[in-house]
Image (tube, rainbow over the protein chains, first blue to last red):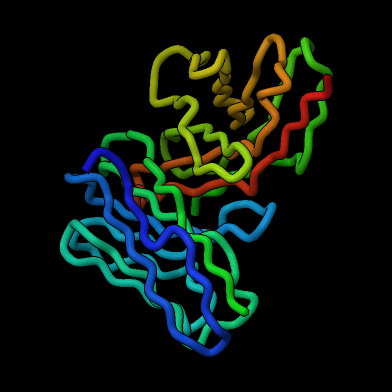
Length: 114
Length: 114
């Protein structure tokens, strides 16, 4: 596609429910990142996929968070048993690897846990 | 591991004055450096990058940044600030000699005062 696409754009969920957030990267981009941004705050790294390498999960805040990527395409970020502190904008980005090119961001999913 | 520091949470500048947003980095090899901007309720937009060559790089909206290897800095600058430059600015580094992951700073909020 023309850019990184994220869905849904907004999600309101009840505390304790599971949610799935989707990211469609730019075609051909083998690197994919998930970040979390709380209101008025900076970017918090969550997870990094690079091609067929094992993902870097070092930023996932708890075992309630997981992410998968199908080959070099779609990625889903799953949050189980959501808590109010999970409320944030979840941003996905993709890039080429080993070229020094920049990452391209989607518009994000705004998650609100009530 | 690579890291990025943005020492100022907020910078206030009068309209028409020059602005500087500071960034320092730490990588094991040659750094690839980036600046992004986030306007209110918008996604992250790429501004400029340093890969190699001239230490002064020019980007969108009249912004430029100077790579200083000895000081491990990549400060963002603009000769004359506009009120519309008010936004959240992120510095990022990519180390192709390691895992090629892009790491972001915490962000600096720039307020341009009319």
